[in-house]
Image (cartoon, rainbow over all chains, first blue to last red):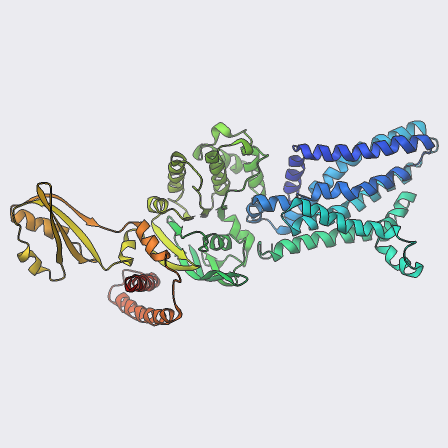
Length: 240
Length: 366
């Protein structure tokens, strides 16, 4: 097995043994569920856009909570030193950890399929295509959030600080799309491009635009590489 | 097998390791001894590739570790300081995880798992979570992790710290067995450990090697003389005829002890005159009760070598350099005369000897 997959597997199975993971999952699903119960059913619209928006917004808290320990905790307990001296590359460690959290995100998103089930039972004219692309968009956006969180986690060995840094960076990228009425329109048109909302929009409409895929992939790769450089810069090892 | 050459590493202004060179061969257990903060862990971390040196090389069988770090780390087993482990995993899961990252495959994997389970005494806790283990079992798990791939070079950073005396003995026994066909480098700040385990000791202080020699030779770094204490039953023994044969020897002390006498001879370190002494005593018809050679304990040596601050003044350092050059010349002549010893080793021994003598003389001056 690829070392990155071995690490991803370990990350995922260890996360599943931790009570805090279930609390994080639970809170996330609970808030989404409450919103869904209060709004979607009342309106009676066979539409997932609203709930997708909430799910995306909650990523701001949910994903930093999942990623905050990924590197910071291993560094503070010293196990990072242990795995860094094995014959694997640093990129294996970083990407493995990324995949581990991504599996967690997929797990939680699977639970939200309940909403799809309810809508398909009670709604009329459900656009399954848009639901599919919506999930795909959330997955891509989630990957970008995870990469940001991992980078934050690589900066410090304090998990709380890692959470705050991740929240600040992803919050900045999140808020850009919502400050349209605060800044000049011309300027907004330029910086809007750097917001998550702008790129998620077409996914929610049921359109997969390769530019949006590339944008999310680029953010993911850049922050994962930054995390890797950060570990390298600490001279964990040379050219691993 | 392992050759470390001119290794240096600083953290900001702090020179953690300065120009360290040494070698270690297969079947050797080398003790890396030094007070806390001497640079032991930094050196070990560079050897396993976790830290990069500012300058210098580390060679495994002639190949630079940093040229191909992955291939090198496949041959190295490492037990980090404080023995970090994943508390949520069971012992078996943890070892399988490490083995998977080391790309070990069946049936070799099962064979090695069985080996470490039996040899590290992990049978009882095999399915137990690491977080619930006692410190002794944790340490064994750490050691099992380090040897699971049967490495050529085993690097152990304070392997027995925090263990109770029985656990220490067990771990030492295990390390001793492992050391028979591997190169083991182990760091410690505990004298007895090094004395009990290692064939060779490297004392490191303020990032520099101040002694690199076998345990037996260590005492010679402090004084040029040793003492032979002789206890015998005789009335007014006269050693004058014997002492005339050996002008370097002095009878320094005679004191009555119970119903016999204790005599103390001071002789040069390179001489061992016990045989001659006992022959003389029996010639004279005296009763020999006991005779022993007094050597300084490793603890004293360590204390003497590392307690002074600053270790070198600048002037002393210059003198030191000059002396080293002289020392090299002398030693290379010696090598020509007797080719029994490899040249490199002789030089390093001389150098450190010089340092130690320098050290003891400055101590005396104070």
